[in-house]
Length: 207
Image (cartoon, rainbow, N blue to C red; front, side, top):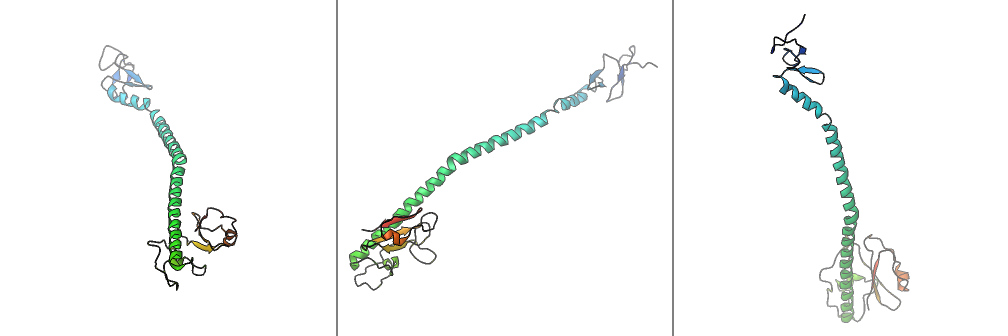
């Protein structure tokens, strides 16, 4: 039995609209993805076409997002390599400079102690003699205004480690800072013989 197009009764239908189920002829039919749509339903059918045409867009969007993340990670990595070490180096240099200033202040205090007392503090008296009178008649301290202290209340460097104090063979004071690693690599006995400091230790001779 032949069916007629509902829009053109004089024409044979070639199929049924997938949306409204009307019989439609070849002129009325629009075939999309293997199914027929009539003219009235074509705009809704077109949405389906758009969805199919956009089916490749989601994977591409995901790939673009991943690519963007990779590029951002690369940029952050390059930034870290190029700038963070420089920033850390700058901080270390600034701390080193402040540590030198700290030790210079202690050296200046030792010189004032010698001016008033006629000698440098003995090793047994230590740097504490700059802050508390150790029995010297001419003592006019304290000789340090705002010293750094470690957890034991001893005079410390800017890294929080107590300064080591000693006298060389000529009675010249030596002040040693453990440096950034806060570990002494300097042997005071060897230093008194003029063999130099070790590691990142900083040494001042007070003359």
